[in-house]
Structure formats: structure tokens, C-alpha cells
Length: 195
Image (cartoon, rainbow, N blue to C red):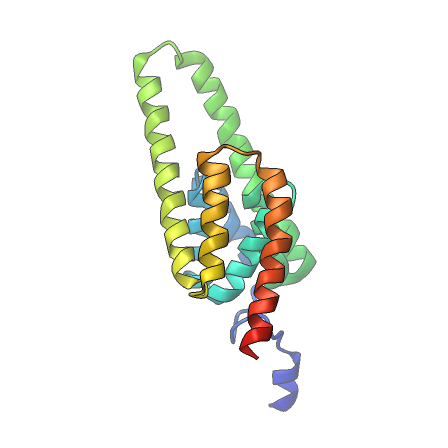
């Protein structure tokens, strides 16, 4: 029993090990049905709620890493989740599962848009899809916010980033390059004060 506990990775809940095939199937489903900000919500539902491969805190760590790395956040998130659940093969399976359905859907939608863009209904469909993506993004943001530590520093950093990027329209990369080290330092100092 002690040997079994030692072999189980410490960053996963009990029984959270999945196969690369399981990861592929999950991310094919997500990659084929998620739009915009809804992707993170769907990954959360699949990885934390349904499969229980990770707990909420582990997911938030992955989400934070995915957002500060260069590249598409959903693909970065898939890579991280696949790696944590099933190692290198799981990472490859998750990225493949996330990218291939999206690629096929984009190609089909591009063809459809080329054929039907002159119809007025096309604009309504695109506005509806955009609204759904914004709603899913706000929903996931609120859900994530509830899980963050209830500290003034968390609120100040979050509001500062929202104001600078969302309202003032400052470029995201310089804001992130300043906000990440400041956030890490502030969290470190908060933790030292609490200890």
C-alpha cells in the first residue's frame, strides 16, 4: 500500500490517471464543440467535474500557465492537461484532439461563409455565436474568481488588468509582462507575511 501511494503522482486526485486514448476522446469532443471562451469552461467540466483528472486548484494552475505562454490559450491548456493526465503522449493527444476538429470546422465554415455571406441571416448567426462565446467567457471568469484566494492583492491585480486591457485598451503583452512578475512577488510577500 505504501509503495502504491509513492507511485501515484502527487498533482492528481486519487484515481486521476487517464490514458492517452481517454485524453484524445475528451479533447476531440471539446475541440469539436467549443467556441471562443467556452473552451476553458468545457475543459474544466471534462477534466475536473466529469473525469476528475484534476481538482479545481490544479486546473487553475494550468489555466494560468496556459494564459501566459505564447500561442492559443485553448491549445496551451490542452497541452498542459494532457501532460498532467497521461504524460507526453497525453499532451500530444490533447493537442491533436483540440486542433483537428477546429481545423475541419473552420474550413467548413469558411466555405459556408464564402457561399452564404451575402445573406442577411449570416450576420445574425455570427452575432449569436459571438454572444455565446462572450457569455461562456464571463461565466468561466466568474467561476474562476470564486476559487481565487480572498485577498486584496488578488482583487487589485485582477481589476488593474481588467482596466488596463479591457477599458484602456493597452496592449496585452506589455501588461502581462509587468503583471505576472508583480503578481508573483506580491503573492510571495503575502505568503511570507502569513507564515
